[in-house]
Length: 77
Image 1 (tube, rainbow, N blue to C red):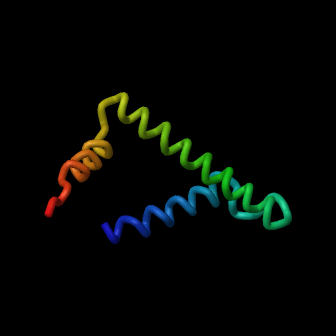
Image 2: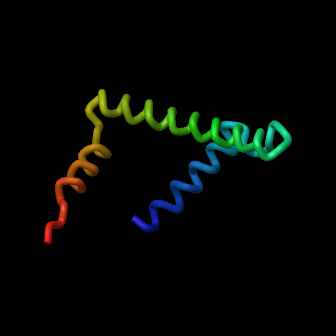
Image 3: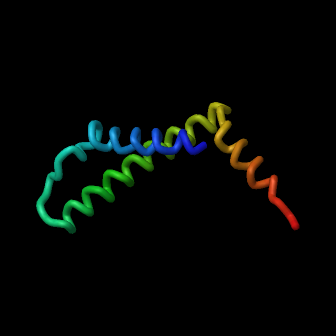
């Protein structure tokens, strides 16, 4: 799992840079650039969310099965 996480972070940043115009700031000022960054993150999360929902409708819900298995394997002392 340690090796998967950095590659997914890099992929997310690369997608925001190449596909969502995050290579250059459209506006000047910290507040406006922060708003641009937040809107880009919201758009990326909405795209991921819709893909997960469509996969779940098709029946490919491996992500949900793994998370359910992890939650059910709680350690009790």
